Image (cartoon, rainbow, N blue to C red; front, side, top):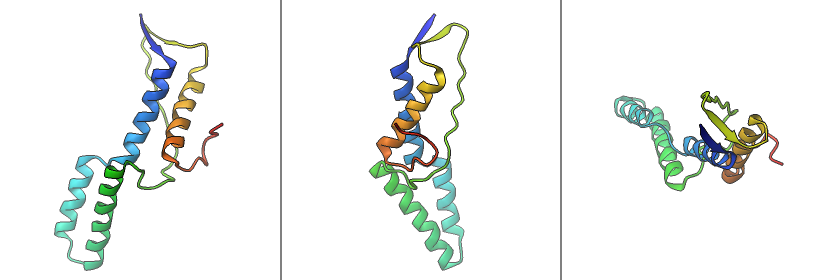
Length: 115
């Protein structure tokens, strides 16, 4: 039987959420760059350039591009031979991981209660 420590799950959720708030996928950045190269309008080119600059700053500084980036949805697939080493409900463990990510990043906590 596989045993997952609650603390490991909390840390993994927090780390994952921080990662996706800092880094745009490569295909997005490449598509934006191609759009920038093809764009004829100076205003639109400037807007795309600003998005690319902001994306780079976000990645280098490890800060979210926007502090109010939406609502987190966590999907869990737990196998039959897997158990979480905790008496706490799974929802409570997940909520703690989400709260930790928001606290670390100083993101808007309008959607969660960060004790």
